[in-house]
Image (cartoon, rainbow, N blue to C red; front, side, top):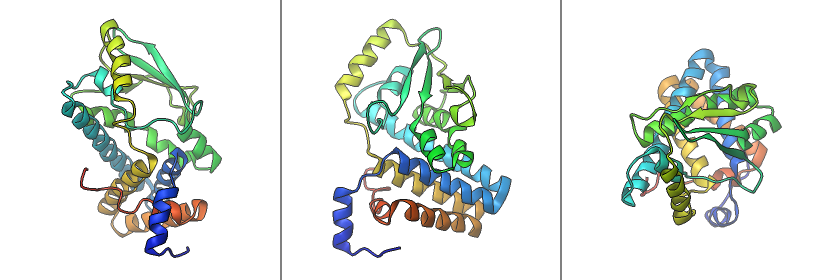
Length: 245
């Protein structure tokens, strides 16, 4: 690992930008070392960490919606997403139906692509177990997102989700307008999302697994730096939590 001076870190934060690949791989490395060190207990800690992470994301989305005077509905949940693909064609997703309940799909996933690229799919797939439902419940506690097909990362042909509530024709039109109105104003880059993931999952692994959890985090960070370089770790410093989280 190479050392960076303060000025170097400042420059790195201005020029280095994490992508979905960095976010996906850091998760998979944390999961890999937690499971390798602690077996089933490690797996459960990873799932617990991802539930906490997802709920934090959902709560942030809800806060943005409420700050804009919007009610917490399935429509606004779809409108206030916090991320977008790194480039056109990286993801493929859409709606299967809007009534009697909204159902959506993902047919191409950048997270799966990253895990497969780095030989980490076996651990990366733990990300998919409950994160969508956790985000939804963080947005509004009585909401439930139900997977209706085997996820891509678990060997399925596409991920499918039932959001439990309809998206009426009027709401579908409003969703288009709301997304256009919001643009990227409520979205965060993957420096932020990767820093958030690292913070929350590391915290839960350390709390639930003790010294082994701390070792899992240490080993994951080491492997992450080996893959991407120290600058992709330094760029996360101080990003989450900050005064706005």
